[in-house]
Length: 411
Image (cartoon, rainbow, N blue to C red; front, side, top):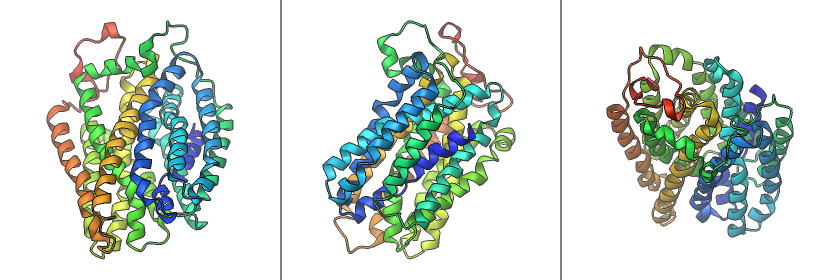
């Protein structure tokens, strides 16, 4: 499980963090927002579908392997296309790649939770290897001078194919709902939506959507912004954030014990607004403040993405656990990042691109998007998520066993 997580996020971290910088360096800055938006659309289209397949027909480790091998083959085509300045073709290839990659984020979580069984508290210690994988990829790309180079796509392709082959050696994770009659609703993971009947789960999805808007802005524009500040080793600096994740992720069991799920998740959500406020300060020549904002990645990701995955791992019935994890990816990497990337791309075109001589301060209007989103999230979460830290997380039963248990779910 640990090597699976390590390789999964080595693949992701090798290109996604500085993809915007690569496009800008090759004269394709005008498609950055659209590229990340298409990546989000892929997250909307593919995870629920593949999650349903993994739940019903295909062992999860095989689905993981097939997706990564096909994605790696697509990634091999990107360097020549981007170098040639073919924006439309590049967008098509990125969309195709993310169709294969996005579902794997939910699949790795599902595989890990299935084999942990009653030891789900150990998940953070497995997930930390994913963070290490991202750090290794970022430092490697930066050390090789590939932060803005199309050659980083070759690194991603090699890592993706390697993980695809390795996936077939993972412990068997058979389809949990194998033999159960298939329905059209399974194509979109409809059963996972039954969890939305529970107020706490619904509030989590709403707040995840709002927080993912900030994530979409960060993923698309953090690397170009650091480049605008004059930072050269952008991939290396971004890796500082993942190193922070390593430090914070191992604290999760203690934080859950002494702080509780509600306030730990709130910290992760609100901190996204704080880091963009620091970006505004950094634009006034305070480069070190931007690095501090990057370092907050540990709280932003560990206390949001990881805890949300743990929550779903505990409340989702095993019969459609892959669909439930995919639903989280759908909301975060799909709808949330789509809105964040699309909106920030429009703001970029009308501010930074329209005033190329204005310098880093021209980015301020774009940073206001995640700040407002964080404020709104904090209000919704604090008011509507009912919490009693003394009550344990409760695993939801079948549809027939699902009367009102909001007060016991994920407290």
